[in-house]
Amino acid sequence: MYATAKAVSAAERLASFRSEDMVSVDHLVVGGGVVGLAVGRELAKRQGSSTLVVEKNRGIGMETSSRNSEVIHAGIYYPKDSLRTKLCIEGKHMLYKYCQQHGVPYKRIGKWVVAQNDEQAEYLYQLAEHCSDVGVPVQMVSQVQAGKDEPCVRAYAVLASSTTGIVDSHALMGALQQDIADHGADLALGAQVEALSKDKAGGYRVLVATGDCNMPYMAVHAGSVVNAAGLWADRIAHMLVPDGHKWQTQYKLHFAKGRYYTYANSGSTPAITVQRLIYPVPDKHITSLGTHLTLDLGGAIRFGPDLEWIASNTDYAPSGGQSLEHVAEAVAQYLPAIRAKDLALGYVGIRPKLQPPGGEFRDFVIQEESDAGFPGFINLLGIESPGLTSSLAIAKMVACLL
Image 1 (cartoon, rainbow, N blue to C red):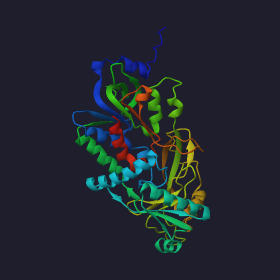
Image 2 (image 1 turned 180 degrees about the horizontal axis):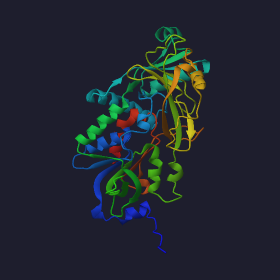
Image 3 (image 1 turned 60 degrees about the vertical axis):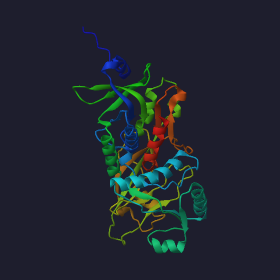
Image 4 (image 1 turned 90 degrees about the horizontal axis):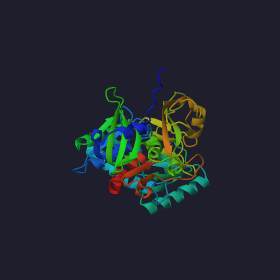
């Protein structure tokens, strides 16, 4: 009988590579979503250094970055001293400027947060004070004026944000990708990180599966590593540490599926028209901003996302969740003319959350890990909303940490 060949683990395969057989770069960015691309672009601008961005999918931004509301957020909801607030506000200004300079389609369209009772109205007044503290321009709109400006919208009270906008996220990522190339850096698609280890001589050894039958694996030596893997960021972080390490609980992601719905008037009622984004009051932990109304750059209305906690970060199945009747019921709180027959399922996205179901607010994790014994390794975890808006500011912060 023939002996059964022992399966080679990813860690063993990585250890087998000689230094002279490894690709050497100064900076390795794991993840080719909007944040990873922004980080790659920022690091690529450094003269005299080399940068490689690896993305496991066959295209850029195929997960959270392209399955969202495409909103440029103003930075109104989160605690004053949080990274979500700081980076959203800074990133918003950077993003508008970048879109102007690079011809990325966008529109500064504005947004209303609408209350339906006294309790929710009180929240809006508190939110207005918070916005004043953090320097985000907002104003309260009277019920009479709201009725004139948006006759299709029901609102007991309204907080208006003038710096909220919408952007073509695919065009944005395409521009970032071009910037990376223009600065001489590399982007590898279909390149999945399978193992990570700290190199005794400094830097990190990284095993990348290429999907190429002629060269199925590539080993990379990187002076620094930025973990911008989005839905997979906790797994990338865990590759670096042994079982039982605090990162396995501290850096554990929970996955929130959200469905987005398109609107098409069924003809039984007058068509709904709006001029800006409409959001309900969020839940107390800001787990979700509610099933809100957004507009695309062509003026089409869509609703979402709803919220369903799931176990798998690849579960894009549209089944499950709320019925169209329940979605219409939620939207009808602020848009009374909506009917379930006006709605159709559009697409599904998944958000990587650090807070578990029912848990309290968790901020972005943007951490250079020298204190944990991993100098030059930066973890980015829980980068959900407002991650798209914050992407350029996150990249700037990462560059400052390296």
